[in-house]
Amino acid sequence: MILVLVAAASLWVGTAPPTPEASEPVRSEETRGIHIPDETLVDQDGHPVRLASELSGRRAVVVNFLFTTCSTICSPMSAVFARLRRELGEPEGKDVLFLSVSLDPVRDTPERLKRFAEKFEPGPRPGWSFLTGEPERVKRVLQALGGWVPDKTSHTPVTLVGNPATGKWIRLNGMPTPSRLREALSEVGQPLEKTAEVQR
Image 1 (cartoon, rainbow, N blue to C red):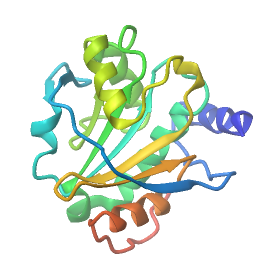
Image 2: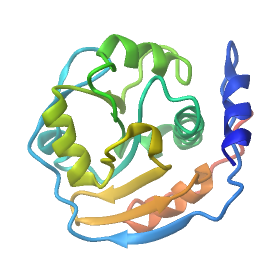
Image 3: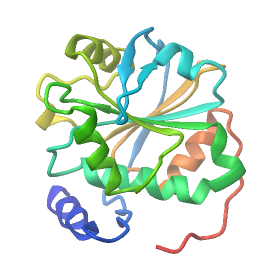
Image 4: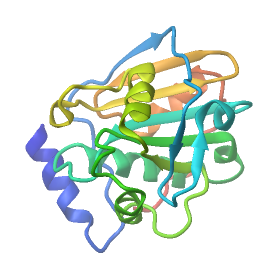
């Protein structure tokens, strides 16, 4: 699986990134006990993001965990987010917040995260924040969201889809397709109609 993902990730240089198809079943589970920590991180533009305040009132949030020097699953995961955002468009996507939290806050400065983000969605990215910050703060956020691993290179693809207003969260283990993420958004209380196929 890893070799397939690496090959897929290598194709997006200079073009819109492709969306990899999941080669293994995605396991989903309803997750209880997710508590959004009242921590302030920094996004790819250097702006502070206080998570508790940012998520307050949001109907849906989609979270993944990555690092910019990753050579395996991080680029394909980001390509899935970019594809889903294009499919949602307006007005469906305006209440959905996308968060990509760095697993390597020491190296992943806002500048590096911004360069990484540009590969998938050039220009402004309202509604999609790539987060880093002080290592201890980032670690507390990762632990609270279930994304922390002692060795960043051993992390597996994990996506959280949640509704902060109701406290309902779904954890997807594996590489979900955009359509599977749409289903999860519906499950947590963000009803979404299927949009027309977006050209790759």
